[in-house]
Image (cartoon, rainbow, N blue to C red; front, side, top):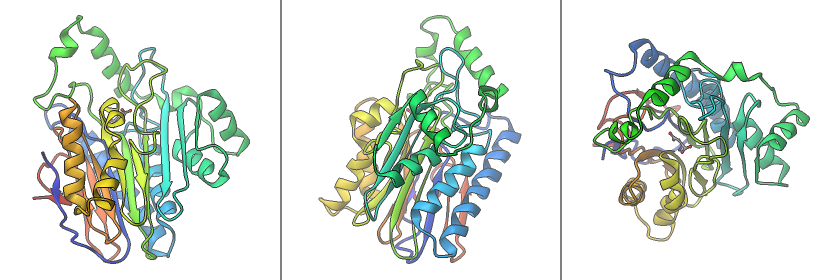
Length: 331
Ligand code: ASP
C-alpha cells in the first residue's frame, strides 16, 4: 500500500488535506501539461480552503471552498472535466458532512449544476432532505439560485478520447487491461475530496465526482453516499474516499475509518489503512484523505497514484501528483 506516515503528527490548529482521486495513472500515460495543471489546481484549492481557515472560518466552509475550485478545474473528474457515462453524458455526484453537527447533504446524477458540492452544502443547510438525485436535484439547485451550465461546459476532449478508447476495445480486452493494482487503465481516478480541521477543532469532509468512465447513466458510486465516500464526526475524524465505488459502498468505508478510531481507539493512519485493506479484500482499490480531531492526516492509497495535498496555515504545504510513498501517512 502506498501513501502513508502521520507526518503532520498532531498539528494543533487548522489543517486542510485534499485528494485528486486514486487511479491508474502514471507519467507514461498522462501528458506532462496535464500533470502540471493538476499540481497548479490542487495548489489553488489549498489556497481557497486555507484562506477560509486562516480567517477563522469553519472546516465546512473550507472543504466546500477547496472542492469548488477542483470542480471548476477541467483536469479532475468532478463537475467540469468529469468522465463520460456509457452514452457520452456527464452525471455528477457530491456529498458534504459537518463533524460538529453531523448534518450532511448529498446530490447524485446531476447534469447541469455547475458545482455539485454547493448543492450538497445547500441541502445540509436546509435540513430537509439529505440526499437528492436526478433532474429534481438540478431543479432545486435552480430554485436555490445555484449556477447552471449546458452539457458542453462539463465535457472535455480528454474525456471524449478516454471513452472512445474504452469503446474501441474488443469484448474481454477491458478486463485484461488492468494494472497490477487491479484498476482498469482507463480509470485514472481524479475524483476530488477534502477534509479539514478548523481553528475551533471542528472537522468536515466533502467529495465530488463524475463517477467511472462508461458507467451506466443510472449508476451511483460511493461519493454521494454518507458513510461510504464521506464521513465527519468531531470526536473521531473526517474522511473523503476515492476509488472503485462499489467496493467502498460494500465496505461502508468512510464510516469504517471513523468506527475504528472512535470504538477501537486506533490511530487514524492505522484505522484508514485497515479499512482500505478491507476494500482490497473485497476486490477493490482506491484511497482516501482523512484528518482526526488532533490534526493528524492520513492519505493511504492502493492504486498507482493519488494526487494529494495538505497545508497547515503554520506554513507546512505539500503537493504530490505521481509520487508514491510520500506524504501524510507515508513512510
Ligand atoms: N469513487 C468514485 C465512484 O465510484 C470514483 C473515483 O473515486 O475514482 O464513483
